[in-house]
Length: 482
Image (cartoon, rainbow, N blue to C red; front, side, top):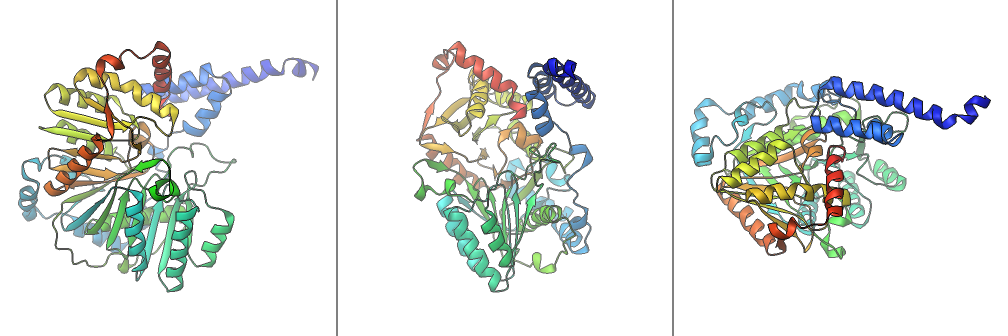
């Protein structure tokens, strides 16, 4: 005992490095992304104890083990019929080609991805801030007749959250079935509010609850989606969570975000996504009702694909769609993202596009809500500037929109940031829209945002201090851990 007492730190260090070396071997055998591998190895070997904690919380890989089972929902007959109905018949491909014009082959994955089928009969409304989103969403909830399904990374019971829960409890008392999935890391709801929600008859479940006894990897693989489905005919997705942070009427800091309201056929795959999440969070099999997929009378023809990615998908669907959109551009690529920590494939694609005389513009925040994400983002900008990409920093407030528009033909709005976590770790959902009028509207929004931006000057940017560049380099090295 005396030996242990007098050598306690030496013993702990030895134990630390035994566990760290075990972790290093495990990481190497997985043969994952070299940058991610190096980041975790450095964390384990250079930072005793802290490295182990980081690896324990963030470093476990679950994609291949499919922690997120989708069989219960997808195997039910009603769901199968809906999925089969979403299949494009060969005879209709020419009609789709006419709608998509020369960019009909923009995303070859359209006809191959089982989880991302193209729908035609849709009407969409682009929402550019939280105030308008909540106004529209609350009105749709008030008019709900059968069910209200909500899946959000962040729901907080502050002013706007309590207003939502008041409305949901009122609808539940009218006999409308309300189901909610919240992410256990992102959301913050008091026990009092949870008790009230349960007493109202609302079913609310946490996605992958984080417990000290079994939280390995659960800080990763979060449900970053923001989905609302009302009566199976109206759907919402985008960057706006349920929190006062997103309500500009209540904030000093202006929050610029983009959301999408959908009416039509694309609500069906969005509904399926919600049901699979609810089924997983519920822990028991949910019975799919035919009322979840009613007929709609939408006469508009906006081709739209709901693309989802996460540990339950074999491919990084959203990242691949963005990559193909960039590499198929012929005129311009306009990107807005709050966190730009891309993989090498995306960086190379943007560099090649810019060097091919394609107009490539990127909007990122001047000041981020995360200092380490801000420095990591800044570490990538010099390479883009050298290739001719125009980089703009948003100054009016914080830009949280996750949007891309290409060649007046393709645009995407969703939850996925241009970073490693959205591409490879979290559950995300984007709408891929193949429609000229929508693309032109998105282009105009982008140009409007440019009025509130500062363009980075290459000569001035490269003169950043060595201290700043060093911080950026360290932040970039930690990017796969963010």
